[in-house]
Length: 521
Image 1 (tube, rainbow, N blue to C red):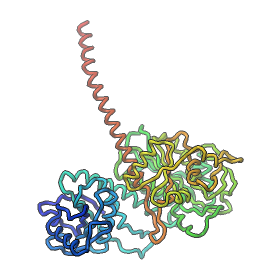
Image 2: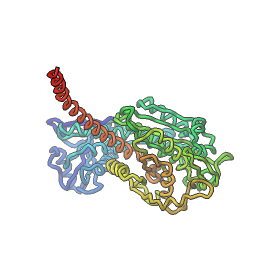
Image 3: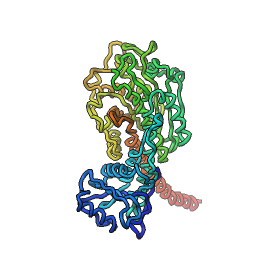
Image 4: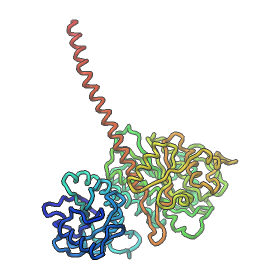
């Protein structure tokens, strides 16, 4: 879908040339800036009881006299904030997407529009028109809606709104990629498929991609990752993606995504009910792919590395067994008490691998524990980090991107649950506090890192009639990376400014010294 901004000329909103016009109404009365025909249509609807200035109010009108757009939709919004705008656009697109409209113009009446709201509009439009069809030939035909124009009241608004639209396009591209990968069934989305998508992304977006095969991982000593992979016929892949948006010497941000393309639980097999949803257990990997896509689309001035340990967790004669002890890349040994706690086993080797990249910060993303779903439900992802500053950055990014997280504890007392009589640690503790002990396990491999962990088991996909990937937390991660890129750019600018001042200051001093030497001669 194409997005742009429009500034209506003398004809105003009524003269906008589009197939449909969506008017988001903010406030408790008809906004004064509405054109006569639009104000009249809305006023008549209010008098007739067909529209009210309150939540969930929508109105569709066809061929409004004096309005060029043949379709007009009114949707009420509580304010012009990103969350309200996203809800309003979702409702408005639902009114027109099934018809013949190819170009939708969106305007807000009753409040000024921000770049954050513009970003939310893009994401709402993409989400409202997304249909999975990769393995479903009978899926509904794609909506004709292919262009969305955001109407700016004044020319001065065009630049910031265009920036919001551009950011929204980048995030939407990443979310779409994440959803497409995660929605595919596990017989299609294998570790090899994820590797292929990474290579394809590298070619199209300018990333450097390396795929480590089983032998490469064996030579490195990734015993924990390979222990999970050994029960499957599908070969494991360790995927490394690099976005070089800054200088080679700049420390990268590293994103690590859990890539279990199907999780049976292994020998500690899961119950049959809803096991089909374990195709979504690579949601962390999908979000890393999506975020790398978004960062490249935005051409962010920062270095980012994406790491994806990808494999299946299957029961077989070769599968790892409860009680087995394996040696991780870090050299620490692990007693595998439960083979269904496999995500942490592949992530720990990836976190150790991340050390060699000398990163500025590392965030791992994983559909790790059902316990996190019990704690937080499906609205917020679980955030774990011993680093207050890093945790604050991620929480702020999630709130700004409407992809929120909630910080969970990492008290040292929880670590006691991972003690083992036969290895340096066990891979699980008791049931109580399971999401926390999982994070404590990962923490044992991050002593040299600024690290955070996102448990997205409750947010990466929806169940029930709307079953499917959400693409989260691509919005959170992208907003965080772009914020870091902006902060580092400002820091570099200040440093360059100080250097320039120092150079200017030294020139008179050098001239004075030369004059002194000349006088002495």
